[in-house]
Image: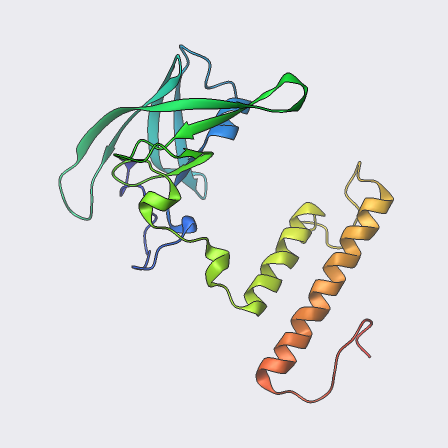
Length: 203
């Protein structure tokens, strides 16, 4: 893949998850209009606003062509140029849903996301698990809280209602966040054998 490395991020372990691989999402490309036949575009991955990898793509009728360079470790670079077939399934109200067909030999699973390697392929072909499958209870709770904070726009202004959000929605999300924080504290006490209990309101 263009840039440093192949489809995996630096610093991965032998037990890989979907978070260890760069990915392309057919839903995002469809929303951006990239899947219209004749479209030529570049897709980039950045870290701290610096491009670390990129591919070129050309949309054709019923497929998208991927063009990039890849290497494993310190091996020589290899040029890759191949087609990923597309498929569609009907949705309600006459719309349709876009899918990639995994290009790995003998697969052709219908998937929304392909993960980078020497070839972009589905999670099953890369033998990947989801990061959440390897999290303990406390890590899952922390991830849930961070996800709620992002939805609430609390990355910058903690506790403030986002502009345009209904008060009822805001109150529901805040309650979910508070309960998640309490559950984290309870799990922390349980794990480390701390005395006392915690409930709503932290008595």
